[in-house]
Length: 556
Image 1 (cartoon, rainbow, N blue to C red):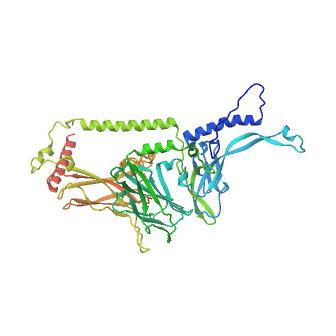
Image 2 (image 1 turned 180 degrees about the vertical axis):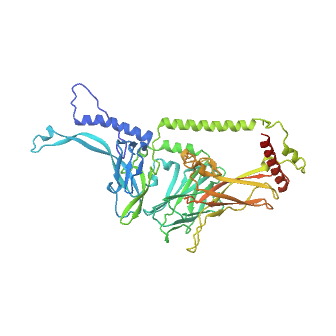
Image 3 (image 1 turned 90 degrees about the vertical axis):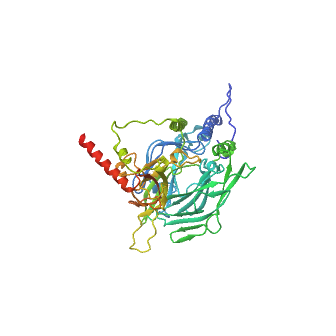
């Protein structure tokens, strides 16, 4: 298969008396290998099939696991045995600057094997001539100091538009928006900041200039500020936008996202960067579902576009974060397959889709049964409810609906500490929400509780299942799950409340008890209205319940 254009396949035609030469045997091999590689390229793409995980062995060495992969030309790359190598001995590793991120790459490589004497080649010559008797399909490891351009990521250009704000080898700022959305649909603008570990504090902001779109959030300003505790090499900032409805008579329109002139501001340490790209991204807004438009674009591409490959095709196996220690380097961390270059097995993909479909069907059935199912009252005890008898002595009021008795909601609290102005000031650990209205009325006795929300957000934007949240809520003492498969990646926090009974509002406060890379925490809260008229009545009910439980335990 040729790198730049499609070449029609040609195979040998055999007949009695045909003279077979080297050209014929080479054509025989090329016919089958090129056809197989074209199939790999068009049907499976490129990426890791199995294995090839990279880990740090010590401060200066890495180990690569055995595995198999396909490159961008459909060629199979096999690493038959584990390999441990010192990073400075890998091709392409430069000693000019140790405080950086480097990328370990893998490429297909052929080597001659078994040199033999050639009788035909030696005829008429004074010296012996040798040729390799075998060709070994092998691999080559090397280091690159720059990540691939966003446009070179396999099929990403079909799903999202990614542009580069700034890239100097130490810091890279990217911005991504989806290619296709529907009118009125909300979508995310994602800002990605990549940096080295020893790069100073980074902040970036600009004001949005939107056409045929609007911000879902209150402020049309994108602001990112690296947490003061730092310690990470990549951050993501997301804001939600919404596409405006189509004008009358129009079938589609392009929503535009850009920065207002003179508002973009990137600060690295004490340095203000002015040399920023002028980014203007467009999102196609149409009534046709985004999935259908992505497939249409995929299948309408030309064959030349489908088999297009980089000049030097390779796979990015790992991102290696380096720290400068004196006149040398230290490997701080290794991130395997930073760009998620995988080849998905069709059988595995089928089972994943089947499992997802069954789960969705189960949810629909449960929802349907919940809607039509009549409530069933199960008697808990043959004895009368003493608390109900006590309530009959209190003043009666109109019964509340379930919606009036319990309310819930989600709020986000920023946990970015303020920069200390004096050296003796401590970093901020306590953070507070805005005043929240619980909706249960004023002068009401309300019980409040809350937990960390990692719930999935309803979105029409198609994203892989592995990118979604765990759809869980974490509350109570989380150390009971430490070391188990249920451990969350959230920091240990304490949650408190202030209730303003006269106004029917409350405020949530959290204390962050450990370092974290997160810049905000999503809190799910619940408010439950007391069943009594007043706090005194509720207190009496609680006292009565305690007495009943004590008596029951005595009888037992």
